[in-house]
Length: 231
Image (cartoon, rainbow, N blue to C red):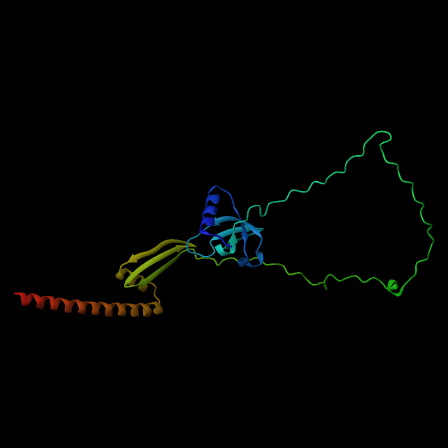
């Protein structure tokens, strides 16, 4: 089981009330599976690890497949069982049972301890350094740190667009950019590798534009020929 869209909406509602809802780590979370944590923030802006969970002294980011909501009653403390007290004996003369007579203790003969070879050997104390060390479960590695600001220029289907992200949050997505402005941005980079790639894209654009112009000219010539026939 993992967090569904309804579960994520529930977590957002609880966080909006100023509370920190509990979640349980699934087997996909690795060594912390089965433990519980508290959600401190949600950031579902196109990233996989968008649920920030605090557990112990750590605060890490996890994906929806690594978490689930606790089942009803899961994690609740069980009330201690009350010991049933034995019924009190009735008071009053003649109501108490007769006390049994004490049995005579058997005679104990004094015997000298017998020393065996094993008993004569000195006790061996274990060396703490030689004892095998227990493996300590390491917490899941923190998510990669996002850059403070990232701007991406993209060319696709004959159009230029720009996108901007601040940290893990997308600020601008798919804003169209004029061809001249896009080329100016590429030239401002001052990189020979970028200039080479851009030249290839520009050459492709010119070739497609030339083919489109040739096709339109042929259509125009055909239309003018039909008009001439109708005169």
